[in-house]
Length: 497
Ligand SMILES: Cc1cc2nc3c(=O)[nH]c(=O)nc-3n(C[C@H](O)[C@H](O)[C@H](O)COP(=O)(O)OP(=O)(O)OC[C@H]3O[C@@H](n4cnc5c(N)ncnc54)[C@H](O)[C@@H]3O)c2cc1C
Figure 1: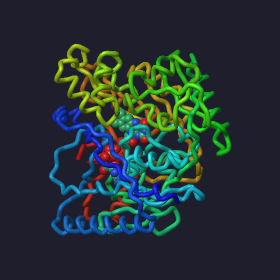
Figure 2: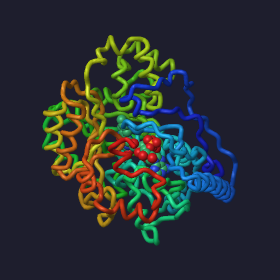
Figure 3: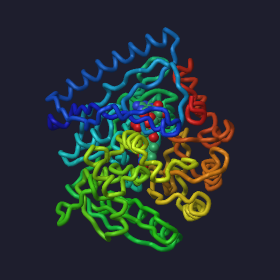
Figure 4: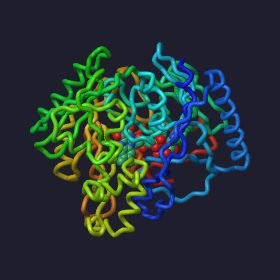
C-alpha cells in the first residue's frame, strides 16, 4: 500500500448541532471557520495498527473509569448531522475525536480499514489520489463513517451498493460492557453486526470499520433526464437501476430531483477519463439549478461527491445564499459548506436578513429522509406534493447487494429497490406542533417504508417498536449494554433523551 494512503488525519472540523436550529439557543458565530488540514504521517500499516490499539486502550480505560463511577455515557465529537431536539444532559462525554484515521487499504480485495469517527471528506481525500473511494459516500462532508453506519447513510451509488451499512465487512464496537468486540456477518457477534444499523449509538460506538472501496476515474459525466409525469419517472428510474446494477455497467451513480409535479429529473453519472468542460459548484454557481439548465455536465470526482454539500442540497437558500450579492459574501467568508450552516444562520439572524426574507413566520421544520419501496414511490410523491408541499425533493434509489441480508433494527425487504425521498424545509403552519411530520410518519408506515431517525419523530413507543425491529433492540441491549450505559433508542430518537 502506498505510504501516503494511510494515517490520514483531519482536524478542525467545525461543530454543528442541528438540534439548535429547532431549539434556537446557541450562537456559533464566534467559532472560527477552518478547513480540515491534511496531514499524512509516513507511517507503515503496522504502526497504524499499533497506534489504533493504543487509542483503543486509552478509550476503554476512560470508558471503564466512567462506568465504575456509575456514569451513563455519550459521544464527544466535533461535528453532528442530527436534526432533532436533544435535552441538555450531564452524561459523561467520551472523547472519541482521535478515531479519525484511515488505517489500512487493500485495493486488490477492495476494502479499507477506517476509524469510526473519520468524516467522509477525509476518508475520500485519502483514497481519491490513489484512484479509489468508499463505495457509498454520503453527501455531507462531516458525516462520519460510524454515524453513517449507525444512521442509514445513502448516496447515488446506493442503487448498486445499498446503504452505507451494506458496504461494511466487519466492525469493532465499544459496547456497554466496556469491551471492544469484533463483529462480522459470520462470527459470534453477528447479532450486533446486523443490529448496529439504525442503532444511533444506543448499543455502542463503532471504533473501526472495514468498508468496501471501489475504483474511480478522474471525472464524472452527468446526464440530467427531464420528465413531466410521475409514473413514467419512477418506472424509468427503476428500470435504469435494474439495468445498471451489475458492476461492469458504465453507470456509476443514479439520483434524482423533483422540482414540481411536472418537472422531475433523473441524473445519471458515468466515470470518464477526460472532460471537455468541467463545472465548479463550490462557489458562485449552484448545483441544483444546473440540473434544470443543462442536459449534461462534467465534474471532477471530488466535486461530484460534494456537489450537494456547498448548499446543503438547497437549504442555504433559507439564508439568502441564492441571491448573488449575499452569496458572494458567504463565499468570501468561506461559509458555502454544510458544516458552516450554523454560522450562516447566525449571520442571517444577526444582520436582520431572516426578517427581510420573511423567514421568521410560523413554520414547522420538516427535515426528513424516508425510504419507500419503489412500487409505492409514485403514491408517496403525490402525497408529498399534495399534503406537505416542500420542494425540491431529493430522490435516491437504494438496492441491497445481498437479497438475503436482514438488518434487525431497520428491517427492510432486501429483495426490493427502495427510493429515498429527502425533504428539508419549513412548511408554513398554524397547526399543532409536529402536524406535518406526523402526516409523513403515517404515510410512510402505510406504504411499507421507513423513516431515518436523525430528525424529529413522533411515534408512540408501541408503533416505534413495530416499525424498528420489534424486540430485537431489547435483546441486543441485554447482551451488549445490560447496565444502560448508552441511551435507550426510543428515548434518544423520539424523546430527545
Ligand atoms: C439535512 C440533512 C440531510 C441529510 N442527508 C443525508 C443524505 O443525503 N445521505 C445520508 O446518508 N445521510 C443524510 N443525512 C443523515 C446523516 O447521514 C445521519 O444523521 C448520520 O447518522 C450522521 O452521522 P454523523 O457522523 O454526522 O453523526 P452524528 O450526527 O454525530 O450522530 C448521529 C447518530 O449516530 C450516532 N453515532 C455517531 N457516530 C457513531 C459511531 N461511531 N458509532 C455508533 N454510533 C454513532 C450518534 O450517537 C447519533 O445518534 C442527512 C441529515 C440532515 C440533517
